[in-house]
Length: 296
Image 1 (cartoon, one colour):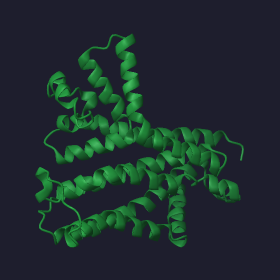
Image 2: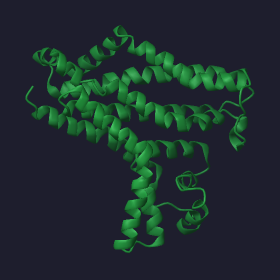
Image 3: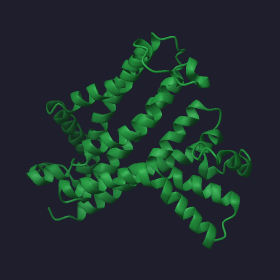
């Protein structure tokens, strides 16, 4: 299939340009270095959590960092996936071959997604090897789920970036919204969620339970927050407990009382996965539509 050829070429180009090797070294460092420093060089102290005697400590240590680093690395790697070829003129050559614009967009998503996924997997394999030689009990299923969720987060931001790249006319016009969205998700989203819920409470008469549910829903529409709460679900006994962590420390007890230890279906894990995938499929679809209309 034509989009497979585009994806294969994109992956091969990353090998020739050393992108794949650089990312492999980077992710091995990200996932293995904290373990090496903590358990082999005994620098720092493991968290005093219930999971500290198992490999779940790795997830606990890494989840906040991966929720920031993986999106940022994905954006840097993918924001110019199409605009760079558009600027160099190679895009016209690519389209002169039996490739449609649809093939280019989806092939780029798959190719860049593979370039990101392979180094993440290698980083996790090295981390698993190091964990096997520590005093921690290795919980393979939890470790695997964390790896899958981390890959998914990366692919989501690859799709988001490629969608923007498809719609933009230049690298500059692609990087600005990509980095802007990154800061919006990581820094500003919680404030935005609080302001929206306060407005709904004031002007729409939202009740207390509805206020907490609406706040959770808006927060879960942030792909980085969706990722973190799914990771917390791996560590905790229930999805409800993982959602409580999305509230501030002083609001958790009240939220637990109001929500009654139950979640509506739109706050369940299945729907959180859907919210996460929204940021993969919708930007790619919108980017493809804009790219298809563009005069190259």
